[in-house]
Length: 220
Image (cartoon, rainbow, N blue to C red):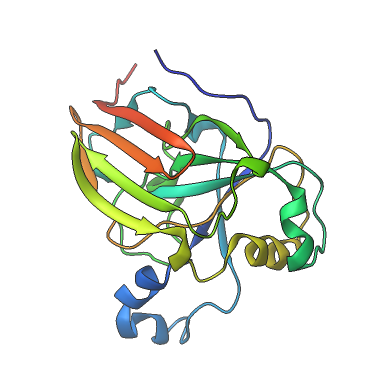
């Protein structure tokens, strides 16, 4: 049975926040139209239609036989955060969870199309929130992704370009984060792919295991 937890906040994703993901692009980040690596967090939104929970099927569209499984640390905001300093940023966090920032494979690394990132069911979050006090250091958590029980990716939040506190500080310098908002801190390089009929599981140290089957999208 699918399970999850309610949050009425906005889910924000962050692009290219892992050193390996940025390095994998090579010289492409220095070519037009951008001509340089990002100097600030590059944000996008995972709207309400993408949200689901632990155990919920991930729909696989007919025009995308494989999907990228984007393992991400999810930061749940607990207090209104506006222009907070890095040393105070974690005081505004309620807790942490695991997110699968699912995407249709694409090459648009700065501004991916909505149709690549925002399909129905493309953001499972769970299995349940873990209180901030139980996570000693959100910037030193091992991340592992399994497809049909086989380990396909292993990384760590230690490899993020912007640690959680810095990320919150930089984002709240220009926009307010509200209680219930969720910040996905980025997807490591080489996100594994999966197809209909397979099952993906993401583990993050101390946060449990988020599992979801992939099923062909049902068209009404």
